Image 1: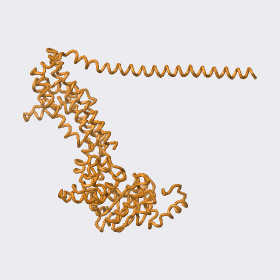
Image 2 (image 1 turned 180 degrees about the vertical axis):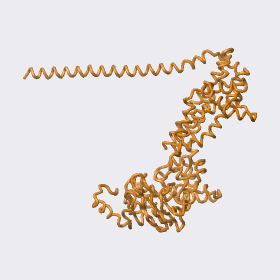
Image 3 (image 1 turned 90 degrees about the vertical axis):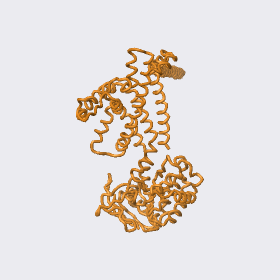
Length: 240
Length: 292
């Protein structure tokens, strides 16, 4: 289980989040631009530090300001798919996916087998030699996901994983993404702007507004959110 | 009524004529502007190209090739290539971490450090030479202590390398800094979450992505070292085979044999052309990578 209780001063407001995500559950994090969604993912991954609080995964503290614990990102075992996918442009698809295993100094034979297994599952084996910068948006997304999953992460973070794809591809990838995430059985947080992602992929959902969790519930409740926010006078609360 | 119509027609004709006059004057302005810019361009190109062409016209091929075997030319060529290569290696080893830190981190005194790194570009080479002399020369503030241990730097090959490092390091560091700044932070973050340490990330992700820019910076530093004159003659002197690099040999030969001087000059021009060609090619590839 992932336990989050963090506070961080941002430029215009305080990011203050207290929330738990159970194993096998996918939490969809929704909110306007600049409300602190990506910052929260970076805090969980260790790429940024909270001012105070505690982050624990399966009972083990990754960050604890009280006890001075701050596990570096490379030791947290978190799979992170960035919004831009951040595939290394000088490497092939194969080398991108193998990167996380090479940093762990795994024997070459094992790397070969594991990478092959993941690339075949993602339908990328045929283009394994292509440079990452030159493949399509959908292939980039699948490579980024395979690269994050091959290290067998204990937590999966996805920052707007479908936003770089065109609308037609999004629908197909949504289903594929849900199945892949379910199969790996770890807590997962997905940042999104799109309520269709929430309805299709998530188990629970949160609305983050200026650094605070204003709504938290099951994904079936999402359709009511638009009405709630209209009532509060917001013009374009969430894109549907 | 009829007179009104006539007046309207007259006004219309007048405005058409006025419009024509205006459009003619616009066209004249446009043509004269283009002609002026073209003339300026031709003049500037001629100003740069003419001396280079003159260099080739004034040096007969047989004499130039013959001068290649002159001991002075061979010594200068060997020394210049050796010192410039060593300088480039020193500048790359010293400058790469500095450029990376400058591109990625903020620290106390960063502004001052960056200005200090850029200073040799603006400082006249002769001033750099005398500054090095009063720092590392026999009576210099550091050289004084080194001399006590029997170490003398001034007027040695080491002094040539030091002078070249001093003047050429900003060319590499500035280019390397820009290349590191162009590497998206997301690549670095992705590598860290995949289990790579800072050092592993630097060598396997950041360095390869920034490589074209670093090579182009190193070539610029090499070229600047090869052409260094002022600081070298002040700090290292002009001794054939020991401190007399190609520019110094050109200057010395000018007083005796002009053919030797021209031969060295042509070699330097050829190297300059090669440098421009390689840097342009690499820079184009670098921008392509950044865009991807």
